[in-house]
Length: 134
Image (cartoon, rainbow, N blue to C red; front, top):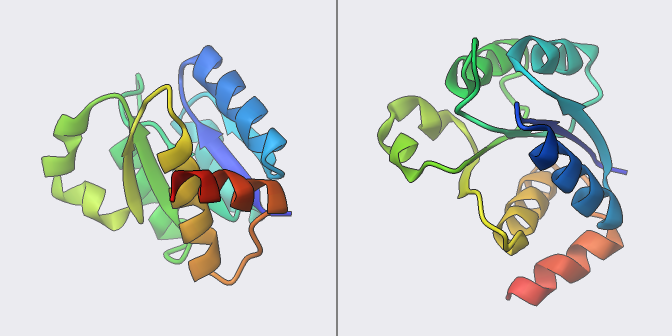
């Protein structure tokens, strides 16, 4: 199963994404901040990272840089409530930029896309959710 690391300082967001992604067939780990996320990535069992940008302390863009320093091939999807970060050139290092929404179809699509590019199988339930978007 594909292992997704969800990084968000908002506990409710982490719980929502965990529940939604586990229902789709993913294995999900969560981190509440940048240092926790970096520790998870260093363990080496993460297939894709779903990363919030606006976090206290170490923001998502700094976390993105540190993750890429550890594993340049690890896909990172930025997931934020603020579309204004798209103008920051550092966001270009991510494989996708998804603005938070109650509709998670874009998120499912980008996760599946990132995994497929790495040759990692997408869970059947996730494929069905992705198909609902198309």
